[in-house]
Length: 113
Length: 113
Image 1 (cartoon, each protein chain N blue to C red):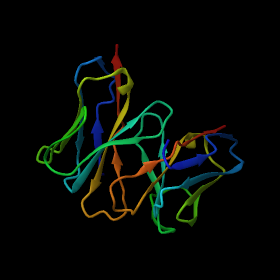
Image 2: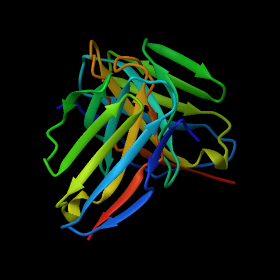
Image 3: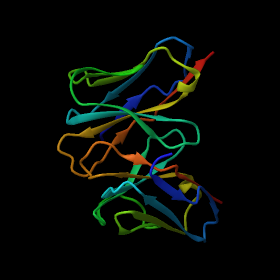
């Protein structure tokens, strides 16, 4: 198991619900990432945080709202999602954004009904 | 569009054989390349990284890079059933300070006993 944890591991929500995904890294890293992995599609980078500051928003719809209160924690707040948002959401961290190795968490399998 | 292309497979090899996984990339500015292994229902795990033309060996794994041909490969010698997984190829652009990785769709490998 890696030093990146995610909760919940599975989430089923309706389109009108509001929920949050949580990621925590215990590696002393300074950069954290949200990725979306859909079936038959490449991993898509959603957001990048470096030292708690958002450095990239990869044209993600506003129904996804990230929050990074400190370098160890990252949240993804979800509201009014669509069924096509159903996917595996992966959190990753690295020491710095420009270092090589990103360590992934186990992911949250999200189903939007 | 910075694309990384992989054959989706499935690639099926017998135990003890050499498995050859291939990846091409379109962005000539790509400098660093990574192979991740992802077991079904699990998160991606870094296996190898390669930055220079030629071969890089680590145990049963050999990564090969040919920048002129924009081609990266991963060879797995003495394949084991435990190597059965999806292998993701990723590339990072030279000078990128944001850590953005471009992933391929992955190649599913099955090693049969």
